[in-house]
Image 1 (tube, one colour):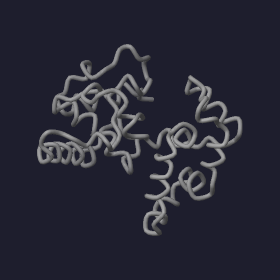
Image 2 (cartoon, rainbow, N blue to C red):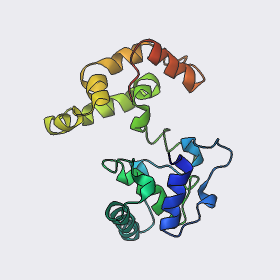
Image 3 (tube, rainbow, N blue to C red):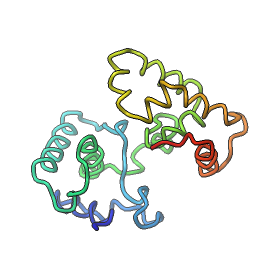
Image 4 (cartoon, rainbow, N blue to C red):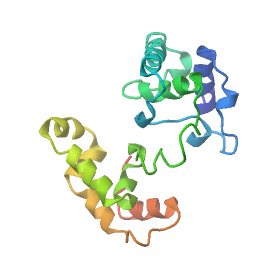
Length: 188
């Protein structure tokens, strides 16, 4: 089995990037925060054309020239998340390029933490999600994802929200996760 570090290192090597400088050594081996990770909110650069060209180059290379280390990795729909850290790194960016709190903070809430959105995000975030997810052409697509279907469209999100007093949230994320799991509402 190829470990996470081996997969990422092989990708950096493929594009001639310095893998070691991309690591956050304060995080444990194999933990996702040790590696550069960005959600789609991090599609930015001072020149969108340069960013787009680099992204397309890397995405096509990964898709067209499969590497043994990625043999067990689904590329659809994850290709953007595989390539995005490489592009950001290649263009001189990194985990501290934007101020703290942009990833899973005041600007974005990534779906990998979808149950937590209803537990801890502002009412404005929840209303925005539900408004964006309401049109039928969007709903048809999103209902294909079990976590979204059950949480947004079948009311599970409101049940999660009701578990917590927004003015007195647990300090630790693990406590929030544990409560959601104990009530049977946790979904990936």
